Length: 231
Image (cartoon, rainbow, N blue to C red; front, top):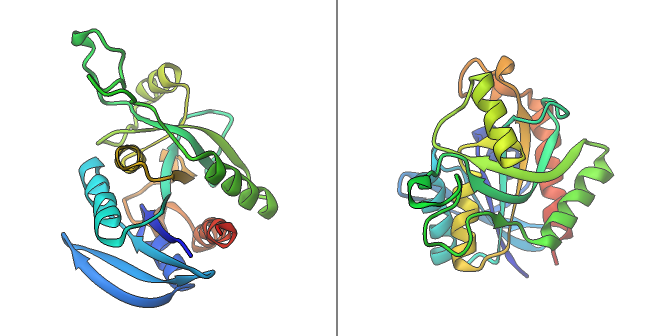
């Protein structure tokens, strides 16, 4: 039996997954609820950090230190970067990096973290395969590729195109990079799966305004399938 962390972006994602869990405990740590329970024969710890890279990293480190998680699944919401993808498609991380990390004055390329051995954090191959199978079996469009993360939303089309071309990324978010970075430092297997939106559908940061409940339930249903397949 493994202990699997699920890090969500939206409360609606978390609520959908929580509804399928046998809840054991809820602890509020650093102002965020960590929900521990059972699902598919495994321990699952569910958390929805506040927005931003630091919040994502702090929650991930708590999951590792206090809950001794074996695997981290980041069930995220991300904005489309690649024109071949559409809202409500999914992206499964091949790797994740920061688009807003720039120490190029020290001779590095954008996105490269100065003095770190790795700046493009690879997802676990087995988790990529399980995620791909879950989405494929459901008939939902899912693409494996790069996710980029920053501490701000990007709405300017020219800047989005620049980020896409520079990093060859499929989508952009405010959390996945920090979660992946923390997992890399702690040698914890990780994958991010992102439900995609486009800026035309965003009226505020309420998940129910970005996605319909059926879209969220379809996405989290595939997250649950990934958990089902983990031995």
